[in-house]
Length: 110
Ligand SMILES: [Zn+2]
Image (cartoon, rainbow, N blue to C red; front, side, top):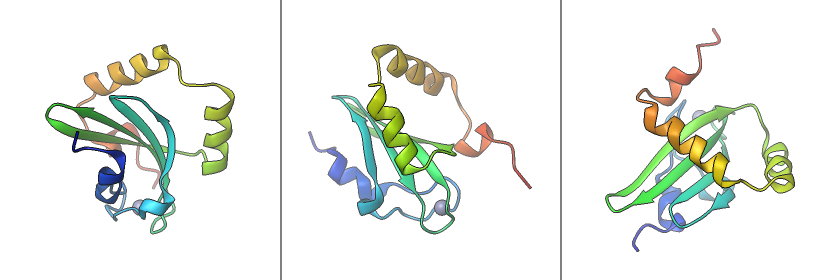
């Protein structure tokens, strides 16, 4: 089990500016054996993202989604309604069917 979250944190990068995140800024939202959801606010560009990390036999795969939610909002959201299996499945299906990068999810604003 060489892929603990603590090992992964330093590897995470902002999907927008590619700057490495400060591990201390990573907020763990949910975690189970295979999948971890993190909220990270980039200090460099100010963009917040939700990062889904799945741990499999081949190692770790991560996928970032930009979000408007602040860390506090996300915490409230996750705290009030625990992530259900359905949520996990739908996220999984979404990730499985998605072949672009994080940028492709969101049209350029400018
Ligand atoms: Zn950034």
